[in-house]
Length: 229
Image (tube, rainbow, N blue to C red; front, side):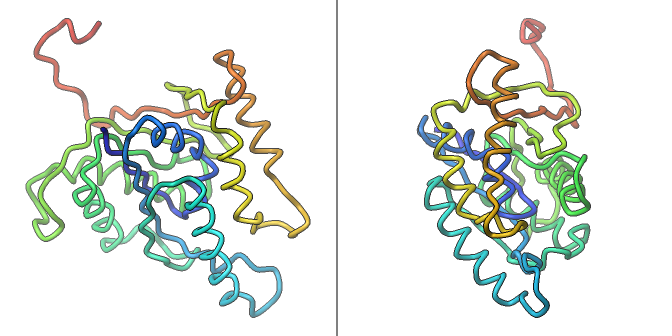
């Protein structure tokens, strides 16, 4: 069994961007944990709706993660909070050391400010979590690999496409649990998600896929040159 940690700005990001891969990892017997920040307090269209939005978002999140079957730890911070702070950077390091993942997944930079910030602090925390520093955050831990997951704008250069054909319907069910909160309640953007996954799948000849870019922010050590092959 391998351990996977997903660092996400909001709980729905992990569902929409890599819900199928989460299902596939769980089906293979691996452990998947999601660590997120946002609480959905901006998911309202009428003045004064923030409190109700947070309550609904929590309900939606519980339902979605019940469908996927992975665990979630969320700080439930305001949606427009500045994530690029000392405290939240430390939280990312703490999460990596707490869950001790073999692999980390997190945002790509080509999205709005909180996702961009998460892409930076998550990747940097992946590096710094292995250092002998900040001892109150847990013992140093080095995840072997780090991947950026794909939002609507895509990653810069895809290095991996995961066939999620078997799990597309489960992913969409979890995605629909969010209602979808950014649009009129009569709308459903799951068709767009399906089209995107189908497009990614067409690149490798499968029905549906999710795309990732592996980060080489710090290089791999090679003692046996045959490891290059």
